[in-house]
Image (tube, rainbow, N blue to C red; front, side, top):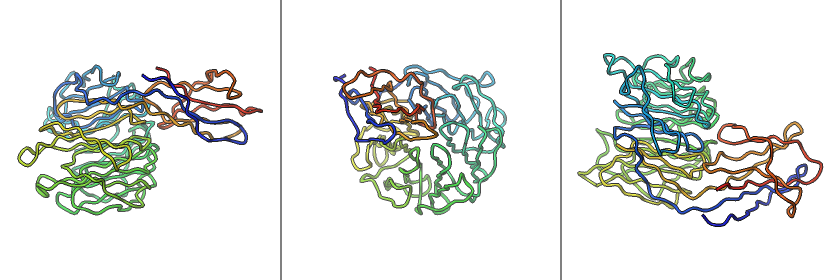
Length: 414
């Protein structure tokens, strides 16, 4: 790791005078590494904001949890059976405490309609939510894990919960072939796309937690949708379906202004999954394999949607991708689960003045940083004693306003 370097932002405030800065070391990029997770039909991945807790679910397979960034995995037993059901999706709160997972049906119980399961202790224990039984197919959640957003495939309806899954209500979205959903960190903005198997594909959004919806894109087929924490950056993967669209490759649709305008990435493929980091600085897309036309199996990563790095895996279909809030840790799932580390991302401090306090915040990093303060650029730096609290996908510290100039920085701790 190279020597730490001080980097400053030109940000000065009239009450808490000083600067807002970031320090970070650099580390070389790594390739995707296969973890020790079981080989099975993984269909969905989710991680905590710092990338330490990863949850994975498989169709006709188990739930597995890693609490150390994928180094080791624990298979969760539900009703003493790790293969309880056909899992379809999973979501994890920013702090890794709250998890939710959807099922399509319960094959070991006579193919009964599925349930939504919840965990409030980082996946150690699970219990059914208050959601109605349905063939649940897609799921998203707010950063605090209290607001959930799920699709019932059999009815084509979208449901929301604002109490952590205790009670559920149907949104105003019309019945459709919804197959992928995403939401902002506060779940005010909801996004959904349709497969377009039996009707034209659409991408729709709501800016009031599902009370009303607007169509943002019209097309043929959409495989997956993802967005940043503020929902300003959105990525939609177009894809062929089993009955329509083969053997043509399809584009990635991108918006960087909350869906006001759209552009297309300069690459096409047989898309299956896509994710956007909470900070909007990392986009990862995975393709499916069609050996009869192309080896397939590509994973693409980008920091700006313009320049893409490609990692090819012959004859692999990527069913799910996710990453840490800062985009420095990434995970991808096919029959195995892979992880990758990117260079450490320097958190940028933000400051606001609220009720006589200076509120400092920064996106939750995947590496360890310490908030420090100084009364001058040539004075000694000391750790801020107040501990940060999690607010959405950000750390936040509220400090009394000082009479003189106070300077703050984030110091990377190797």
